[in-house]
Image 1 (tube, rainbow, N blue to C red):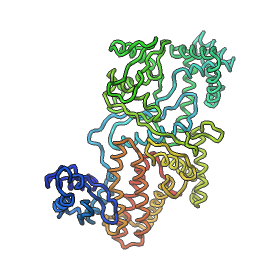
Image 2 (cartoon, helix red, strand yellow):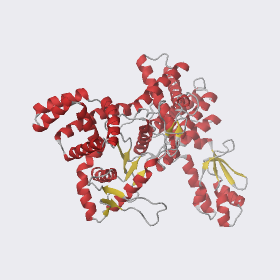
Image 3 (spheres, helix red, strand yellow):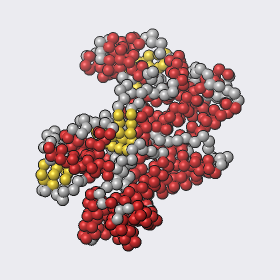
Image 4 (cartoon, rainbow, N blue to C red):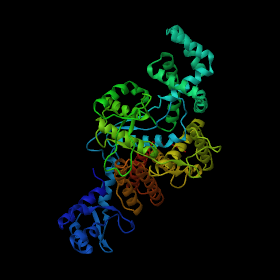
Length: 596
């Protein structure tokens, strides 16, 4: 099932071919003047120079070839050679009925599904998520859902930051702060039995929560910068942890457990879920044999006591550093772990494509790691892609902070936005008939819609300013506006059901009906653009345009008071509009309430 734009493009392309020109000139786009036509083709202007003919003459010849096409009500010419295409009522009605009957609501699946891994989120052990994790979570989740809907086999990986120096630093700090825990640790390591493990686990569970870790880590980090002895002790603890020291591993597992519980809570509140919760620690055992293999492949070069992979290419327009694989102290580096993660993913999933939804400021790092992976044979050239994004900024244009200049925790941002959603619902007189539990559920949905749509409505590569008042409004291009439109259609459908009114065949007649069907038809193109460009804003823009088209249809075309056949047709249009709007929002990770 093709969308009207694609069908028309093929027809116009064939017409160009019939007059001796390349079919590629038949590209069709929505009309710049919807009052004059539904679609337009500007190919005659592009073809004129190469063909040595006047664009108007080419346009007339193409229009003549299109005469008699039953899908077209008219083919007109404008200006020096623009071709205007207006669809017939029959074509629009047929397409509307196709969409209404299609479980995918007019969207196609890819013809050759791939295995795709989406790396996003990037939370760290022992730290609550902050506002800097918001865009990775929102964009990564939308891309995962979009690729899965298009037919690919997709895994979403949180890529847990659970290894390295920060773990040794925390272990040292926690033991220094609690002599009882330190004594229990010594007893357990002297006799690693269940009898000695139980009191150690009880003590650490009682005294070390995520809040404790979140408080301890910044202080320990500052102390290590000023105190070489503290830093050396943390490095030693890191090495012993990675070497398998039993007591340290037990502490580390507790850190990971309490962190993950909080992360899952915050991610779930945002409608974000992962298929894989692997972390940097999962590839620890791969690193030593990987380094040996890299040496055997003559990819490692000595450099001031360290070992590197040179990734620079002769055609590079800017200088890229090598990948530091083994430090001068003999330890694996951050990039080494990323390289080992690519190898691990190749073995357990074998992705055809791996997408990394990470801040654009990490672009050079990923380019270096990806090139090293290609050289090592761990991934096919071009199968690793950094899906970068800008920052969410405050009114000062800098990355968003709290009023006192600190980093805002994601949990606090969600609570702040939910409070604003409650306020907006009360202001609009919405939700008064809901139970307290249902009202809270609706407020959370409104809050998440406000946050997510504000982010996804922008091209991911750009930065944007956080404006809670604007994002939470029920008017304008906002998530709450889209939820309100969806709830309004649901209310209409409930009234229709109560009156025993059923949807029927769609017969397009009024201008607002034409516009709504064209908006529904545009779903496939928006999905294809979002998929190909890894850019969910195309889908967000479609959802907004669809909601706007439905609002105009709702105002111009009475439904329940219309004659029976018209009523059934319009009710079917409303039903299809709701289904497609909810599907588009779900692909963006936005859930709609039933009532407001």
